Amino acid sequence: MQSGRGMVAVALLVALVGGCTPAAPPPVPEIVLHPQWRELALPAPPGPTGRLVLRDATVCGDRWYLAGAVADSEGMTRPVAWTSTDGENWRSLTFLGTTYYGKRAVIYALGCRGDRIAMLGARSGGGHGNPRVTQWYGGPDGRLHEVIAGFQLYGGPDAVNVSRLAGGPRGWAIAGNRLAGAAVWLSPDATEFGLREGVPELARDARGETMAYDVTAVPGGWLMVGALSPADRLDRDALAWTSPDGERWTRLPAPVSPDYEQFDRVAVVAGTPYAVGLRGARFGAWRLADGAWADAGVFGSTRPGPVAWVAGLAVTDGGLLAAVSDGEMYRLWLMSPDQGWVAVAAPGPLPAIGVTAAGVAGSGRRVLALGDDGSGAHVWIMDLPPKHA
Image 1: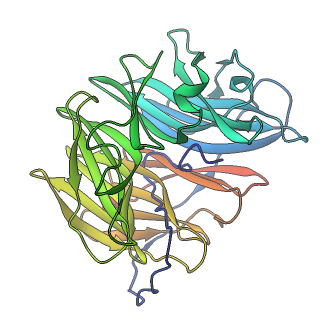
Image 2: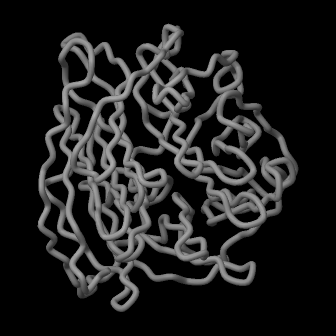
């Protein structure tokens, strides 16, 4: 499904690779953290049984959320989600879908505004099989309500993709792309969104093609991250934008390097924004300080051939947690305050080839990871050791 950027919540990363494959980096010594993962059993959602499809997880306030779909033997799906107060004991949520594609949506992205939850879902359909994006919000009744929107709000002839959403003091924002380049959808309360496309600085221009992959609220407005494909060379440069209101945007590029680079995911750690994405043949992180991006380390490596990407990112008391696909497997990395980027042993094999997904979410020292290999999905939880708290 092309409407989202994969899955992993709260602290996982993956970076998208396109174009030429960079040379493999020399091996680097790795510190590996071996946590005690525990697999969770989710309660069966309402309705017919089927194969569980998991795509994203997050924590809003003091509540954990996990979402995706259930697929029957014919491949027909319906949206499902669960919530928990501790990350271990879960209950199913009710979806109030009203449209054809809403009732068949796969939920792929979750966003928070305090303790409020909103979601993006999609299901391929129509003559061309394009993703039909749907949007949902949590009501006071605890149920998830589908937002009724015109087809061309998220689709139509100018559609490219709809990536991630986030809430903040100024409402809600969705990051994505149209034929005009990077775009944003805005809402005061997540019950109805309006599209802003072709916006100066945000959209493509003579400098090159722009792409937006993630967005977060920051003091003073919004921070959106993505990339620029320059008009004068075959390359990609990491690019971000800031806005006080979602209407006016200012470019905030990373330092230009000869490597293929892009920002895939963004999160705020102790008041400082961090972006994670592809950096040449490795993954990299950048922190935003005094209005400029600074190096926050490199980690891992990518495999020749298939694409690599950052699947998820989460903030924990132990540091920034990323789930990344190196083109072969999903792998977990933790940005430890005292040791830099540390590899985290996954709870099991997480293949990244085919229709697969991985994700993470975190609160305090507790971390949740999900994996979906296309034939079945699993959820695990663990507590970071005290030395990483």
